[in-house]
Length: 336
Image (cartoon, rainbow, N blue to C red):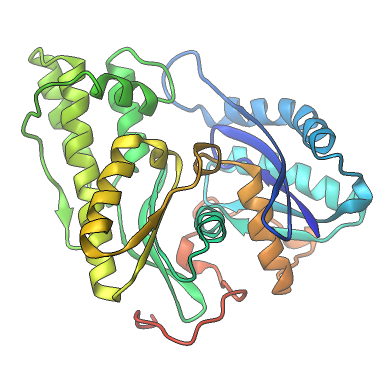
């Protein structure tokens, strides 16, 4: 079986093809990069609409896949920016109708978890999901993925972008923060905002901007920010592991490309005797292959929808999706 996946939740337009063994047959991706500032949803959507024909052609060419080999079309239904989601959904509907293939809706956050789960070989991992728009700790229980903790305001990637843009970097800002942090020598005190299982980054952003205004170098500021923000993520992930008695942890989302975060998570997991896994960067960032893989799982569970019911869901939560492809004999999380 081969499924084609379309990703368009935010700044990235991507078309991926994957088979039933989770082999990425093709992946064609292009990122919208604003000339200044952050993402402009309508401009990003226009970028996606312009690029999808070429991305589709590239993906099919890379894979050597004929249309007859594609058994379903999966698309990111939510969460995300409405105009961007609609750009991808429109392409998915067109392909479904033109090729006569089933249409499979996919939750973007669940897709990050499922691609990490299959690549790791783990059966029931906790997910630390760190991206621009989302920051969550997630585990499966009773037919759904449950959010055990999350950001109370902005995602960790959004936080890094805002800070980096204020220091002269271009979007996305995370790679610049990571590069500067490698040259940092001093960790300054910043707010450490963990509230039970949740985290908050708005106060950290304000405090970091204050230090910048006082003349703290971008290298030291980046090191300080990474040290505090990633320690917060490690703490809530460790608490989730302890609560569940989990033995496996996976990372997902664009911020999971960061090497300091990976090392900190690995150190925490090793201390607890927990196995951990992070996908390669190309499958941590938004991509069509993860949408296609989750589409394969959802198709096997009969989660096909008619085009008339394929409206996008910009505010769809991870825990609103029925993960009926999962089978478990035990669950440590109580149902809602």
